Length: 341
Ligand code: ZN
Image (cartoon, rainbow, N blue to C red; front, side):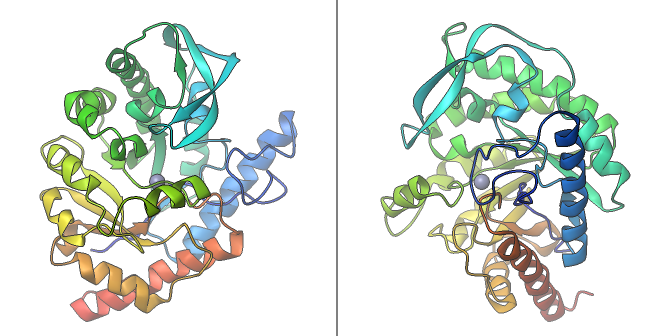
C-alpha cells in the first residue's frame, strides 16, 4: 500500500546533455552517446532505488524530449520539415516536425531501452510514452488534416510499440497527456477513444499522466491565470473514471487543484503528485505527508501511489535526489500513521 513512483523523467547527468533545460542537446554522438545513455539509465535506476522508490522508471535518459523521441522512428513524420507553432492552445512556441504521409512505425522505438532497464533493476518498472492527443498537439500536419484521425493513427502506432515493450518485461505503461488539461471537449469527443486504442490488448498496468506542465516559465505564467481553484480535472476525471485505463497520475503538490476532485476517479489507482517540480525547494517529509494525507479522504490507500507532480528533467540533480528522498520519507510517515509497515 502507498507504493511510491515517479511521473517519468529525471535530470540528465551533465556528461550526457546540457543540464537544467528541456530539449537539451546531447554532449556526445554515435556509439559514445549510446553508451552514455545506458550509463545514465543505470544512474537513474540507482538513485531511485537508493531513495527507496518502489516503482522505478528509466528517467527518460535516452530521449531528448518526451514527445519527439518517440516520433523519430515513425515514417510519415518529417523532421526536415520543422516549423514553429504555438502548442497547448498557443501557451508556448515549439519547433515541431511535420506529418507529410501515412504513419508507419519502422522499428521498435524504445524496446532496447526497456530491455536494458529491466535487466538492471528488480523493482517494478514503469515506462512512459506520449499520448495520442499530446503528440497531435506537438507537431504540424499536412497529411491527415484531422486531429481525431491523426490521433487514432498515432494510437495504433503506440499500441504496436507498447506490445513490444510489455513483452520485454514492463509493469506499467504510462501515456503522457498534458494536452488533456487544455482540450477538455476533445478528451470527451475522442481523447479517451484514442487512449483505448493505444492500450488495446496490453497485459500490463496502464496509466495516463495529466498535469499543468513542467516548471518552465510559460507554464507558471499560465497557471497564474487559472484563478484560485484549478478545476480543469473536473471535466476529464469522470471520463477517465469510466475508461479502461488503470491509473491516473495528477499534480497535487503546491497546486490549486481542489483535492476533493480526486474523488471523481473512483475505481482508479491515483498517482498523487506530492512533490512540486516547479521549484528548487525540496519538500520536507512532513509536507509530502500532508499532501498524501489530504488525498486519503478521496482515494483509498490501496489505490494511492505517492508520486512526483510531473517530470523532473529541468531540475538540478541534487534537488531531484532530495525530492525523491522526501517523497519516500513522507510516505513512510503516512504509512506509520495508518499502521502500515
Ligand atoms: Zn507532467
